[in-house]
Length: 88
Image (cartoon, rainbow, N blue to C red):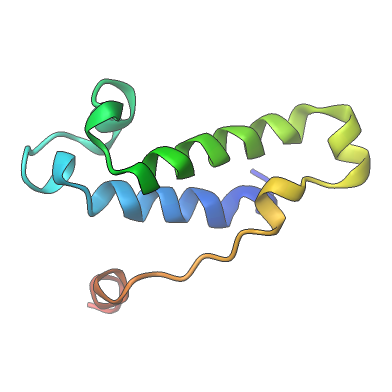
């Protein structure tokens, strides 16, 4: 996959892993995205839509010529809990 969407996808992954759908209800992250999207926080829902637009922009010939603006402008900063889990 192109690097233009990696930051968005990483942020979406972290957001879903930190959501109540995964932590409290015990669903798999893939189930939360497909079947329980209404239960996710607004941040995760907007990241999901942005990741979709970024992937869609990779296929759009007009955006390929101009560059995929949706994904390149996003800066991913992992939260403190995610940094701790990655370091251990």
